[in-house]
Length: 120
Image (cartoon, rainbow, N blue to C red; front, side, top):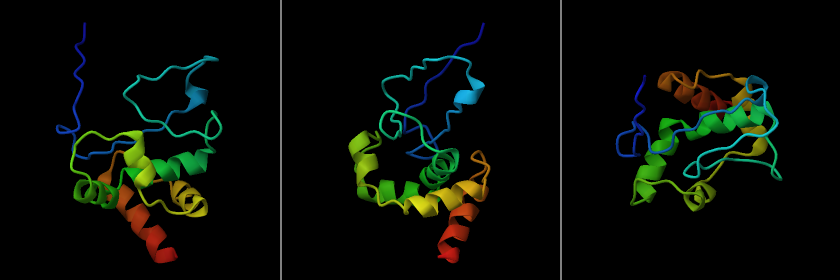
């Protein structure tokens, strides 16, 4: 028997923690997400893989975490907060997604974003 612990944003290293959902790994026609999660979609459907991965890399970056901490006075992240973030273009996010950064490695995420910035 395992016991799950939910972390609040105060306990996390970053205020925004992005993860990818890969529908190929879940053999089901329908999927549900907890109501406290924010998710990105396009017209109610999924995003292209490179775009989704680039978005996750961007959101998990130290730059975004620092931006959010500086301009938001609270620890909870809601959809309005995410809409107010300045995002790279879709093409830049796709390129970032192709860089294939390891989302669990902060240095790798930050290096991938730095590479995108230097490439522009």
